[in-house]
Length: 108
Image (cartoon, rainbow, N blue to C red; front, side, top):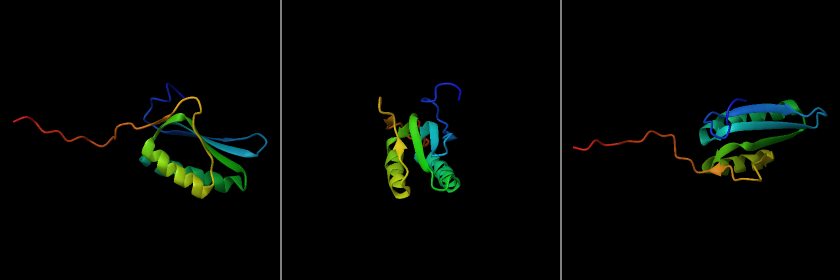
């Protein structure tokens, strides 16, 4: 993956299968938002169905995770029994400003 993945707005996902075939890791880089989670969930479900009982984990240690996305992700991970790895060295959970357009008014 090119460039500094921690500053990228785009979410990139790589699915890695352990050589032993015991574990599948879904590694994401970029920014995890509530919107990008909607694209990540189908990847997790497809990976789980292909794994047929293998241990599936999400590695978000190289991603920037919005705080509201983390809350939803924790609920999802609990329901689907999928461990989520965040960076232990630094907090990669952040409250970045919303990407919603701002309304401004012109001075009269």
